[in-house]
Amino acid sequence: MVVAVEGTASLDKLRDQPFTLAHWGSTLPDRDVTPEEASGPLSDDEQLQLAECHRAVDNARSAQWLLGRALEIVRRRRLYRGDGTRTWIQYLATEHDGMDEREARRLQEEWRLAKAVQDALGKPAPASHVRAMIDYADNTSDEQAAHAYVMLRTAFDTARVRLAAHQITARVTKALEPGASEKDPNTRRQAVEVRWREIHAPALSIPAPSKSAEGNRSAAPGEALDPLAAAVAAAEQALGRVNGVLMDRSATERRSAAEAEHLQSRLRKVGRILAKVNIPADDIIDAEVIEDDDEARS
Image (cartoon, rainbow, N blue to C red; front, side, top):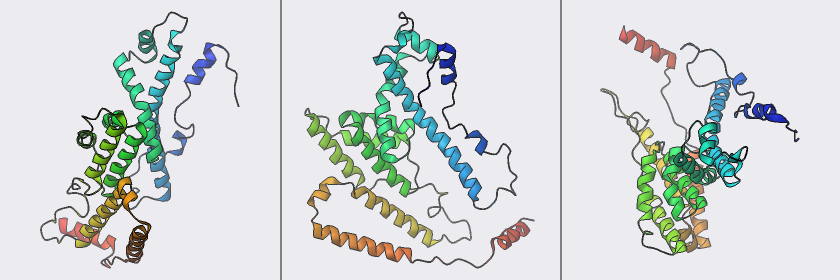
């Protein structure tokens, strides 16, 4: 429904509307919990609370590129002029708390890539990640850069390793090297895409998880490191490689239908085997273990 707006007061009311959903705050508790209350796995209610908090983070990241889009609309349509005399610089100073032209230009340059990444990933990416992919997008396209980012992000998420902006920048720099001397945009785009696949698909260069991560931590004195945890971590990294090479278009073009069917059959066999795995554990009740630890410390 379209509501007619009359006067500056009505416009101000529209601008005062919160960006997040109106019910967001009311869905979250307004008190802290004690350690006794917040123990063990998250309950269903706690899972919902965490999801609401994550929605707020996603809203904030989406709002970042929406700001860039809004600035572009205001500038290109000259909506900043107000009574007809206000300049673009004056608009930024009064409406955006003194934002300088450089920051406004950066936001306008990044919003299309940020939106493409959000569409491809299914959720908004950190602004620092989008910024690190800008050069890649400039040499290819926003959609191709988004596709490349999702490939990298998926591999890191699968390996349970945090992806940092400087890691993206280093990989983008390597990917752009083959296309530096290419003047034809299409040739340069292809060269960059092929180099990106070479960097990530054949052997994903993912740093090892931190020592605190399960399956990669050091054993404490007198403690034997669980070899199954390391095996699971290796399986997860293998899955990351599979996800990466599935996006390799050149390999897809060389692969015959018979080869694809054979590989599909092998993957399904592995999946069926893994799905039937039951991991045994000690029968000692957790409460008893905690009690023993307390007694040892006392």
